[in-house]
Length: 320
Length: 303
Image 1: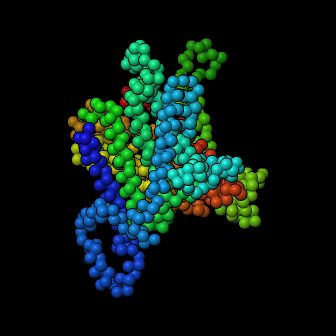
Image 2: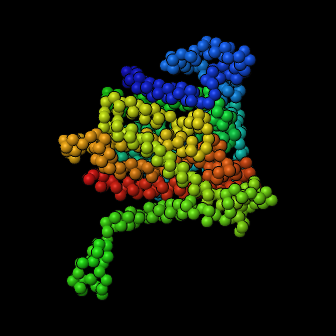
Image 3: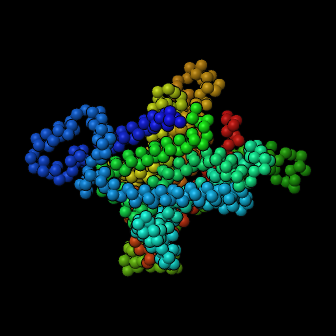
């Protein structure tokens, strides 16, 4: 198992390198002097008063006159130390800015993720065990979901539940771990709009995978042995049905990251997503770059976890 | 004998001892395609949207930027079926014009994605080894991270605007074409007709263009139709966030964004465009699915 994990880790490395390369290239393409990305506007202005030689000296000191490949390597080194530079706009270290907002986005995403998985799998099991109307509903729901912008759904929900019915707040963020009641009230609409259709896909996949597994011989054997139906389903069938569902769950993570940017905007939640939008509007490249790299890292890790889960669920995979 | 496609007119063709010609195969194929009710409805809806897009200046009751501050934020009425926005512009007209831009962005973005992905996939599949490894790693990296974040990155570098949005969406969607056509190329390049062409001395470029590409096209078309939907959704998201296409250009995403601050005064500004987005993406998806179902059995016997 450990060797399998190692192998998967090594496989993910090129992807991360390519993305870092692209991010570095982007930095060179952004209008404005690259020196700004490292020292910030204020210090640059000070230097400028010293005239061109002062700027050149600083450039040399920062290594910006070296060949690009060496710059890239020291860029990687800075990344490894968590130095993402300073925001063009606020001059704060980007890492600090992200640190302030990341917990909020993480909480929102993980809560949605968990709800999606639990709801999707539970409904999928129910749908598999009681065929009929549920399939049509689930399929329609999933087909519609893929075609609907989640920020628009969020707006619809706000109109109905906040403005017209007044049951829930229109926006804002309250930490559910410090104030559960108010926190949950603020969470309901964002989680629903973020996860509405992701859970539909998980439900469909669970249902079809479970149906497939329930037709297998070993399930019939288990039943013939006199095992309780619930044991048959949960102990034997479900575990094997989970494999394709894992793929879907893994894929949904990317959708969650992208979705949270939009949802945070609609509900004015002060997370990383909001920061990303502002950074793009103001061409605050160091912030964008950090978010791009971190998202990639998150996806790579998520894929890794999915692969490990595969390996656990189906031991044959480890030996491929 | 009657020319292809027309049954001989008479009391009965059989009376005259003549055979009834079957319809032209292409027409029959199209008719069969739309026999499925989902495809028929989807085609109808898409047709309407395309008509709206093409004939917008003639169909829309007003211009997309005709401002009338006296008529600001009116509720839906006979004169303004969806009301007006803060600047007094007719929302229905803006949405109709929005069809133009949103659809245009969708089509061109898909075109760009294909223009990038197809050559990549062809080369990767045909050349194998190093080119394959590098190109596929690049493709994997692209798939590795969330679409919207990548789009944010590109817009941060290039800036907002119609062209940049098309480029950004196009670049972000190339992987699927690259992978598809690579798979097709891999399976096709060992086929007899390719070997024959090579034996006859055809250059690699000729083989790729004339033999492999035409045969690999079917799944690409299916994928492209599905990609149209994602492209429009991506543009709507970017424009809604204010970093895609900028006002006053009336894309559906921009209109939803316009309506968001005034949602209590006239909620329809934000509500209506969403239905159009769903209509477009849904119909394009259904048509793509139908295309896939129709082409699939024939794929097994690729010509």
